[in-house]
Image 1: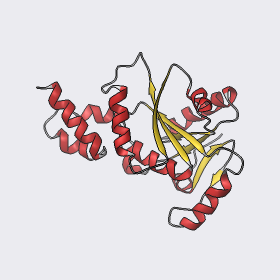
Image 2 (image 1 turned 60 degrees about the vertical axis):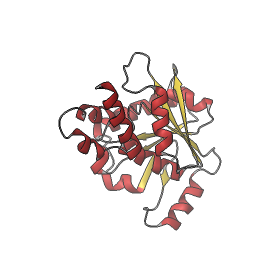
Image 3 (image 1 turned 30 degrees about the horizontal axis):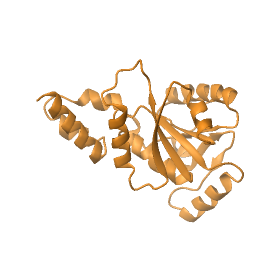
Image 4 (image 1 turned 30 degrees about the vertical axis):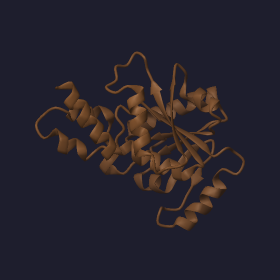
Length: 209
């Protein structure tokens, strides 16, 4: 039976289905750069990291920071689901993502809808899709999706990254569930970037004016 790789393995290896990208730990930056230069010799070093980002969290920011260091260009794609009720508009989410990624020159923010992620990745000439793994259930789900994506676009590979334990359980749904009770501002502040925190405060005040 296939088991999920250990946490220590994830911190040293980005599992890329179609390729296996082996890197040194972050402390060995020279080894990391050598590994990065060898891992994609003949393929475009462009990746897509997609989500709803409603709102962006520190977990999302960690994923973006790691992914942009692995590729020449990272597209952070906001997926629009017309059947899903979102707290923030696509434009608001795009503004928040632009604010928190301003210091990453190789990151751009885009919006897509009404198509499979793997087809969108093909449209923007991305050779890789980056996904976060927070638990064994995430791993099983993403492994199944990887098989489907491989059937639809075999030339596009999936890279799995595992966030640190302290932010692994942070999600947009969790963050929104914290809003409202006394003291919520200080609690939420721990889990979102400053620009997102300010937007959430403003939104709450507007809704309760």
